[in-house]
Length: 315
Image (cartoon, rainbow, N blue to C red; front, side, top):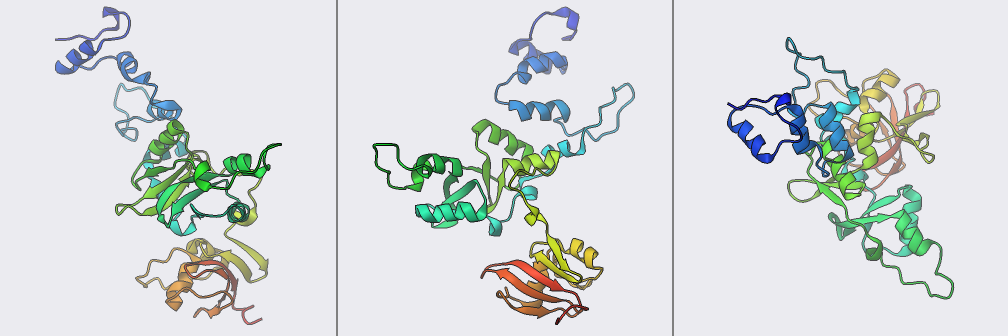
């Protein structure tokens, strides 16, 4: 029988000793496991955090046994690294701002300016055929300051400044993706479904926000709010506004509790009511009294709505 005592040996254990321990049914001490696994350079910073603070066997939620040392309480957000999946965080395909690989220089400038994004996925033909990512910094350094003195400006080719993307399945834990982003130094990932199509997009900021909360920089504005009240009883709302939150705001149900349709957003209410995507400028009355004016939309989706409550509808 192999006995594991700290006083029996000095220095790290060899692979042979570790194998002998497992063959005998024993377990090496924690410091031996750390010597064999803890110093792996591939684990990275986030890997060390996850393995040090969250038990890898998933037993962190089990009650402590007599004689066990109490486990320190972890911040709730940190557990999301293991519990949340990519599909829980990714923005849907319909909201992805992407550009074709043959886009012109002026059009790319317009997309960067209008979207406010610093990274854009690049596709060939359709978004289901992604080929890389365009970074605003790469574009600015190569084409944003004009040619160097005594040289001519080179022709614009988006392929010359493209960077690789990360592709991941919807079921991947966000902690695993975070480690991969750190290792590959790539801060954008596309979610690929079982059929090979694009099912969403994430950035490293999306993942970190699941741990520490919302991150706002100098360019974030109140546009992130789902709705604003223009005047009493009149709301300007995004179509993606969570339905339950807006119903709580106005104190009125906009869906039938017995309806089999699963409607999660304010725009979904209108699409289900009309059976189509209404066009900009349409005014759609709701049976309960409110009126919905389509402020912004494209052929595929609604973007912004104006909601007039019954006391202001028609005014």
